[in-house]
Image 1 (cartoon, rainbow, N blue to C red):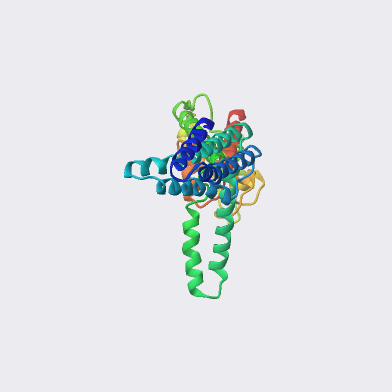
Image 2: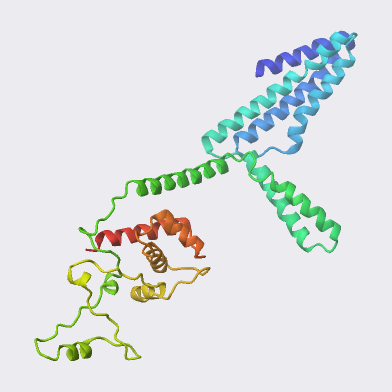
Length: 334
């Protein structure tokens, strides 16, 4: 890069010297390539310090060589030489930009931050905040409309060129893909629970177990004793029906799923309601109720779909944590 810049300066001096003399050529090289070299050193130093470069420095890196190109082109005496004389001073511009670009990439690699990108992002965010405020509160309707459009144009530039933002978004996407793969594999390789080995499991098992029938004494008044001992509700109606033939043969009776209010009462928490913030225990109560609302019990994906369709709110991470706690309770329940 240094050799390219030096060759551009030597070529410019030689071209202008043949037309205007060595003194004029030396001044032209000093004003063009020399000033460009100074700006390049300033840009390089600011980049190595992790600071953004002023706009005047970036503009000067292109404006000064362009002026030298115009001056050299005017000293040429033919179309071919005009093109060559005009291109020669641009070697210094390319060398300066190349050094600054390489230095910035080195700083980003070692320090993990890009001062230029951060500066551009800060300018965009400040402009966006100003236009949003003016679009909302300015008394002139035309100004509000113009700021509204300007804010949408600025919104497209938010995060452009920000390497750290891109890396964070990739991390978030990787976490979501990992979670989805974990849930899919858990659904695929889950072992079905057979009724012969395990009963219907849930922390509310005592509420699901039918009440035992009272043992009638071997007396002639069997019907009267059973009638008195059977539980009754407020309307004096017998709650538990007599044992059927299927129950006498040892067949597991059909259990009616509990309502959400009953599950919440057993857990000792207020009844969860849709569109309201839920505590961790309430979240587990809702998932337990949804899981056992069908036979066979719902999987994680089905329970989450039912959770969203019912209007309950909760973050994905909290739902996964609550589901893990629910599965742990099921594994630990005899």
